[in-house]
Amino acid sequence: MLVESVSNPQFVSNTYLVADGQGGPAFFVDAGGPVEPLIERARELELEPSHVLLTHHHFDHVSEVAELRRRWPGLQVLISPAERELMGGAAEAAGELGELEAGQTLRFGELEVRPLHTPGHTAGMLSLLVVPAGSSGRSSASGGPGGYSGEPGAVFTGDTLFRDSVGGVRAPGHTSYSDLRDAIMGTLMELPPGTVIYPGHAEQTTVEREWQWNPFIRVWRGLDPEGAEPCTALGEPATLVLLGQDYDGGTKAWVRWPDGSDDIVPGSKVEKR
Image (cartoon, rainbow, N blue to C red):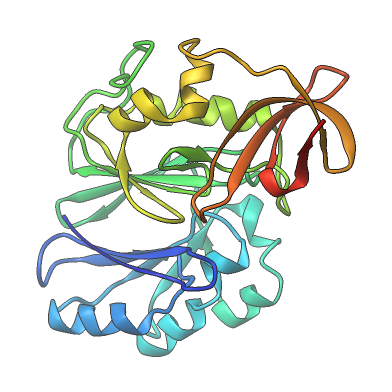
């Protein structure tokens, strides 16, 4: 599997070009751009991409779909049905959109793409598991990395999981903290330890590394204690459970509201009391 990427200098969002070897079938994951370097790289590798697979609808992940379609007019653009209606003007620029859902399998040469539903940051968020064709699926839960059997592959996690951080649940189209935690612990952390994570922002990591060192996952595993410091979050009283780093050099905060519900919010919106 070949993976090429570019990062948007404003949003730090990643666009990926994935192929089954030089000259093989290829596809894009997200399209936040700038896509011109990937268009040139596709030419050098003799690739003719056939699809753009979108993890979710946010502008920083879809803004240059139209640019890719200008280069390859036949590109099929696929997104979760729950995300399609939220794309706004980007949907019109992208043209006809097909549907992509958990349970489907797409074949690109000797690669299979298996969408995984990982809601939280958005309702229809998909993580895209890429494995060798014919690999077996999920086995019984193991209580840690490796709940999926088969060869380790790669997973493109959109804005669900980052290196040392997690997605927020306050963006447009979000669901809940519980959804995000369950998507990470019950889906992504069940993948083989060697699975490479290509996040929607910043640098790659692995399931094993995040299982061991991601601060949010460590607390969820019971390895590190929850914090209990009073704070103000989004202008409301709360308890600061964890203040961790974020992909953009800032911070991400896990807070608990007075009613006992939890939230993941930008660290910049939290003031310690």
